[in-house]
Image (cartoon, rainbow, N blue to C red; front, side):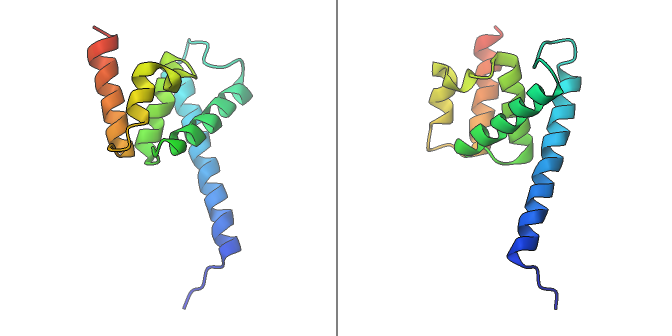
Length: 114
């Protein structure tokens, strides 16, 4: 029988989070190449790390949904979540994390881009 201790699990979770941060930092650098996303790679890493934390505060935790949250932060500014349209959606307790991202996508597509 395999037994995984709490300390081992914590190390695994840290490594997994680091890998996700690396992946999202690389993704944003490519997706928004040519835009001044952050002053340098460390700044982009901070934007990603803060964005993951913020997304979690709103119940957005699935990897794809966190990715979209990070993309929205880059596209509409790091404080986009405080704008009235985004805050209304993100604070809606009737929506799941996925539902919040779907509503944000719909709003940006149909209202902000038209």
